[in-house]
Image (cartoon, rainbow, N blue to C red; front, side, top):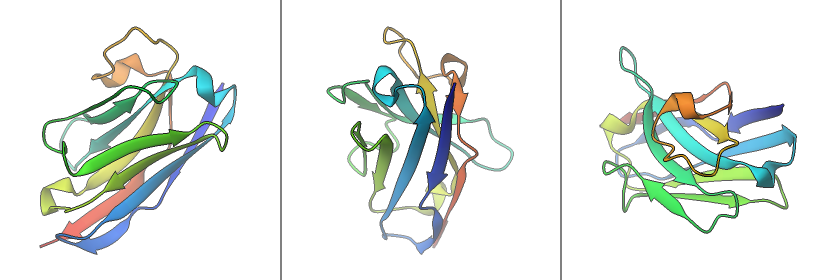
Length: 125
């Protein structure tokens, strides 16, 4: 069992930056690949970014590539999402997920074993 708690969301203006954190507890954080997803009202949860267990491999959705950076600190059991040049279309609840499988692509929510409760990000025009 892994418990995940997101933080760092808020209300910002377009062009601003935010850094989200996801604190993990329970089983060894460094065993899990981690991902960030987001869900806007009336839409399905969508992939944002993923990082391998070691942190050596990352992947991003096209919509955030070049603006968002996923990282992790295994010594602190924490996952991060640095978001720059935010746009109104980035408005959503952001969730972190833990995937015990290293071989998956990680683009789908069903691939993840554990989820946090989410943190709201609102970007005003």
